[in-house]
Image (cartoon, chains in turn yellow, brown):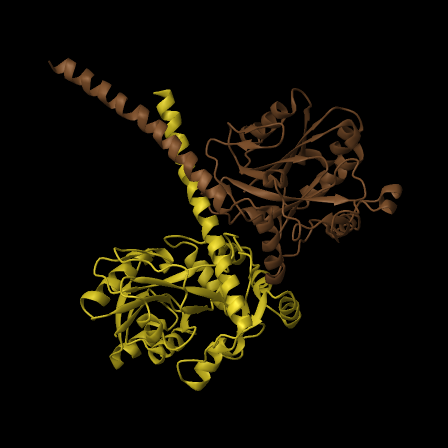
Length: 320
Length: 280
């Protein structure tokens, strides 16, 4: 099996090397990466992998068009790189199989299905910035009810992996795809370990640049406005988990210690597994339920927008 | 961004009116439009100068609230409007009310506040002190979500507000299942409740004490992730969105589309016939 990863990156120099190293060890055979006008050294990191022959680099400038770039790369994976499966990632995301290897997990998907999802597990910033993000950020959110706040970076979601398809459309955020391939829903063979905000400086930089993208998410608008008002310390501070918050979260069951990525990067292998203790499996299942509930809320919100459009048509029809 | 609070004070609200207005002006509200029936409430509010506009209390509750909300837009340039009640305190889950509303994506025209009903202890009731116990939703799922939700809405000069506070805009798109504002509500004549699981909540008492001590504006604490995770459990318990409701919603939209389709084709055929008649 050949496994290809697509990557869209902008200013993620502190993490992108670890991301690519990890996935190459975890079973990814080749990386297709789009660099969106990085200015922090990310481009040079990507070029170093291109020189090694494990990555093909595309350079983009101007307005962010993530879905278009991602779809082009996912199609190229099928047409020019002989991929069997494609995973679509951001620089701060690490695909970790729940058991076996990534290729084992994808190989287990019955032939008639072509799309599977991995649940995103959000990791939270910790005080200080002396060590690498993976050494520092070993606290994971484990909420059993969904945070449906449109301005939170920690809303439940999942990332799509799919068989190679030369016509595929990967939607914004890679949470879903448009394809003739059959989706296999409700089974999550992997976690995507997600490290969106890592240091105060990175939080501000990411917020300021992303607040004006093709789909400015609430969390970036919040960071941008905090920057405009000189309040980044306060806002980033509210995201940071100190020891007291960690203890309270562990008591409440909403925070968990998760060293899987740290261990994998230390050991230089493809990573430790959860290897399914009953408690951990139950916890993962309840987070799966929270994801389902969040998706129901998302659908309802889309229907609200649709209802508003229908109402406008009804009024015009009645008036005409 | 300009945030306007419209509110209606009754003859019994004189004491609370000044406290309520002072709180909201220090929580991010730019202007209060207050309908008062004359008497001491109006007098108390004049001390706020041009940050409070007093309006006459005329018409039914719905008409009055609608008139105030429209005035907020047409005469006072509001971007967002809160249509509040005398015994409510709109508490932001963020630095201020404005900062909570600012990053809400454009497509949402209504943000909902989660009402928190406070009940006095026997001692608080006899001394007249402000209650500090409220019901927790964590263990008490509600059967009627709409009774718990209070809307804040984007400016609309044609807004309609019902007597129960429900809002109708030209484009109604509520942000569902997450409530970034809590509405601390102190019902008139509330009685001690031994039958409910109550939790202590001293936020308002502390905020009012801070105002008395001269702090202005108020500095609200941004909840951390553990508090947000706990709040998510309560938001889910409100039960605003679930699968059966979603299915009902899809059915309703299907019926509305069918209604539109039934009117669309006869109109097209009539037009075609007219055009054909002209050309022959």
